[in-house]
Length: 222
Image 1 (cartoon, rainbow, N blue to C red):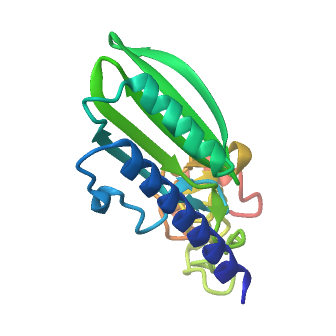
Image 2 (tube, rainbow, N blue to C red):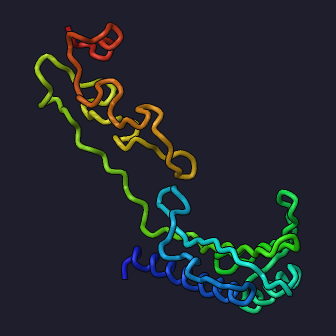
Image 3 (tube, helix red, strand yellow):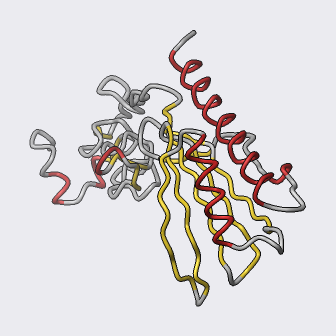
């Protein structure tokens, strides 16, 4: 099994484990259960930095039984999660006048968050797996130049900015660059247009059309 297949297999295993745990919690804590709404079919992009990393994530809302208080729901959720080996903490959050009891659980890099309140019968479940890179970092491929000294058009010179590449020399024609921590950001030289901003993709410039400043890049040009 190659590295990519192994990573996807591990992510799928985490997704199945998370879905099984959420299904058990939802079935135990809420009424009129609709597990088809517990969507964990495909992993989602979690981190756009290279290498791209993915996780399974889902949100589900149900209602607790009318005879069960929010405090009892929170206590039951805590017990079920701890029995399954999750590290559980509880806190209170005020959201627009509704006081929620928040149960947060961690295990194997996966997280479950349950919200319940005495002010509403709604019980909210959020879950996400650990983040996994599905493939190794992809090397940046330098494109072939549009023009070379041997193929430059007569009466033209290689573009001083890209030296015949034609594509933006800063981002290599991708339109984006890696910023801090390998996060992608729009190239600030070509502004995502991908081509060289001087020759506009031609790789060469007309010698007779050069400005005085541009001629300074070609000291041997008469």
